[in-house]
Image 1 (cartoon, protein in one colour):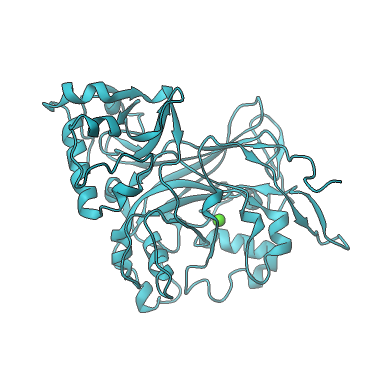
Image 2: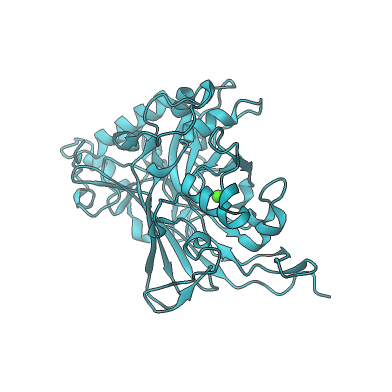
Length: 418
Ligand code: CA
């Protein structure tokens, strides 16, 4: 597919992340006014609430944009999603007769503050990147036990906390927690000294359904994708994780990108999951390409410093698609809801430069890496800003998510000190 030209000239520039082919969904406000739904187009945001009030767009049901989230719209279902996208494309396409009606509802993206695009119903995080799981398993349990025996048969995950999910730009506070290193006799309560990131994609469930569902049905239920940084306290994690998995290590924050890129916009970029060692059981079998070719990178900017690109990888490296994860999630009886967020798991490639966490980049802190500024890092320092970026590259256009950014603030004083 090639670029669909818009009368919004900035949407036709080759370096924009928001051409008419994209039309990602977010929630924004200007100068402290009401947060409301918007669609990114070039360097503008189309104010969907005001467009709806003006009667220029007609969703399948009225007032779905009354709330500052896309949940009510998502609940309308797949047919309504497609109709709305067709409508928006027609309104913004070059030569559209609606230009004069639509133009007053555009605002400058540079003036906007972005908010959470959805109300997250529940949050599950998976562990579906084979290179990442192998690397972490090697560090935690040794090379011979790197991949747990179940790993090649089911997408492993844990139930995270919806309340931990924050939008890009939100500052992150270094957490306190219970730590016990290999050389410590007793555990202690202290700020995490091994605070990390995880480069992931988040899939957003757009419809409720009967359960269980097939992989194809799961694919159809996914509304769109965001970039996702699963901030992780490795020292808290190493002490607490056995036998039930991560808990407080993953409860500080999970940052998502401001824009949801719809599955419809990503359709031209579908790719297959990698070759498998074992055939999957029937309910998890691949039934078409359900991953996406999305280039990903991570930058680290020390306080007052310049950014260093510390990793480059691709979403197509995942072992399980979000559709397989969602299908698996429905097999035991719990219902999935509109606004459920599924983290992919850390996306690492096979090379050192493709590692999606600092834990892997510094090999557990044993091999610190050097930034452009000459400083060394093993884990995230106070004042560091971490940014995830993603791009699906088409013929003369790029689909982006907006940067997924967070700055780490120093730990507060001991909250339990007497
Ligand atoms: Ca994770």
